[in-house]
Length: 532
Image (cartoon, rainbow, N blue to C red; front, side, top):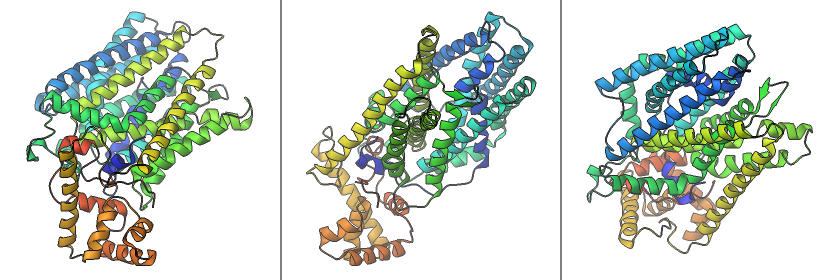
């Protein structure tokens, strides 16, 4: 869970934009061999010698090697954009075609009963090398703000789970044909999207209020052109997103290790957990609330899912409620994964971290966790119930999430510093003064532009910090009704209808923040700890 003050960093988000082309991600995910349920489908054709195992291992090792190469290169060349040059687009197109051919060949060989281990390993190497540019292309298409990334990512997750579930119920010949068509649709069709349209969308989404460029910063602080600047930005970001990112890795590890199913594999926990978590995210994204989406997900949705999972799995084994809990065990992990990945993509969209660096780091960690999970599964004794051991690991992680949430809340409640400035011991006093001055400049600019009164200007200062009418009324010694009246007048003058729009408007005024400040959640210091 992120620090509440830093969560305000992602709070200012525009409305959801309709981009139907992004729905094709569901086809890519539902056909990707790295998606664990697809490996169970392979077992239907290779249950004896399991050549699919060689394919998956060689593919994961190749993906890990490619991700590490990109990670090292992007660290030394932070301004490298990936495969967006003319030569790079040619490489991406060739990779997408080869990836689709490798998958269709794989399914055809499985269906025909071919058992050449060497051939399957070679196909895994080709697929692993070619899937990297394909995923980078998809990530670039998703360069948007946090709300839009969460929304379309959740739809893709739910749709891919439903599609994979449906394909697993088909006869063999139809399942193989479906997997081939999905591989082509998910990897080749995105290349047909207009490059100009994608470039315009990326430029528009990257120009969100919290976007920052080192060249625009007066002191050149946070310059990503040097590895030291990149490392500083990364440390600042990981300090606020490490808990959901760890949940993403736990999810990758567990999905590669264990699956709970009923009705002889007809219903698997990966499908149900992904659909339930995605439904929650889509509902939160679609609703217009005063509280920022990032606060609702971090402080409400994730703890609620974790609590429900723990309670349901505490019932005796075999009871209906226990079965429901086991089927939904991946719901909180999927929700945490969506949260972590959406935060990473939103940071890349704001150009606070390079896209190739963000992608390669997350992908390398995911491949490592998956390889570790497959190793545990293969080496475990058949009479060992992995579910019991994994539940201990999962409970420890859930406990860490709850403890971290409590620690952050306690730290904020006991803080004696100015609530408008996050409590970061690594920041010196001069930097804190600059952030405080930046906030006042932006609020003052909004107040002057929209002709706010002195009292409205004062109240806007508190609203920009995330406070509600109750706190404002007590602090300014006015009645709650008077505070609400002033707030309604401010919303009317600013022509906004929600807290998110107000924060977006304030963040759009004044001087741009440096990437380091923005990555720490300080483009405008925001308390954002209240849900009202």
